[in-house]
Amino acid sequence: MDVKAYRVKPGARVDLQKWDPDDKRFFDGNKEEGRAALPALNRRLEALQELLWAEEKHKVLVVLQGMDTSGKDGTIRHVFEGVNPQGVKVASFKVPTPEELAHDYLWRIHKQTPGKGEMVIFNRSHYEDVLVVRVHNFVPPAVWGRRYEQINAFERQLAEEGTTILKFFLHISKDEQKQRLQDRLDDREKRWKFSTGDLAERKLWDDYTAAYTAVLEQTSTEHAPWYIVPANRKWYRDLVISHAIIGALEGLDMRYPECEPGLDDIVIE
Ligand code: AMP
Ligand code: MG
Image (tube, rainbow, N blue to C red; front, side, top):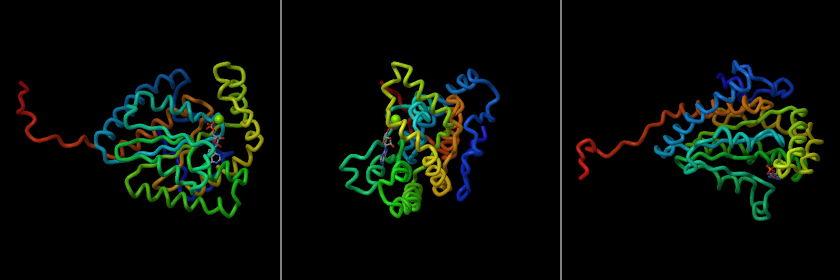
């Protein structure tokens, strides 16, 4: 799968109207076939994560962003199925606590970044500080306006210190969000996920689109690229993200650590 096609080139203009959330051009098959292709990728990711943990050299950070109902939780469930919970961590960023608000916006983020051998998945991230914060003007434009550069500098530092960073924008259409919100209302077991606050945010769809566009245009870098993932089809979304992560891990050229010498001659009595 040519996941590079979904990568935002550093400095490129982004018009989200031109990125089709229904796109599935790199998978020749239907939904059932797409779903059936995932387990093999899960096993491949599992093996690579085992190697990452064993080698204890690289750090991997996966950032998931997207509108409400875009599938951040579902991606975590499906793409990372089978990885060893020892060595993989999910960090979900909610409305900041008073303690978090008393610090700079990257304080709570930096604490959750991966250590050597670890993979951390950000379910929302520091990007909320130029998304929801920008849309609602929780801080003045002059303050959020300088955050793009700060974020690039922060991510560059993480990358230079050995972190592989992959950022995924889960791109759904406004119609698809309507359907998913309706599903949450209709299904008793999904209702807990429904928040009337999501309806207020939905009214701000265009503002969020503008805020996401600024993020994609200003913070996709060589060391921390954004991928615009067509996410109307959950199965295709999972395949794209799996392939992108697997490709990045394969590029690290990881090796199992050297064993002690002379192990071949050992006889255990
Ligand atoms: P959920 O991901 O559905 O659990 O919702 C988490 C909520 O926290 C979303 O409405 C986010 O917009 C909000 N949130 C996350 N980070 C921030 C932030 N830095 N400032 C304000 N709200 C935030
Ligand atoms: Mg929510």
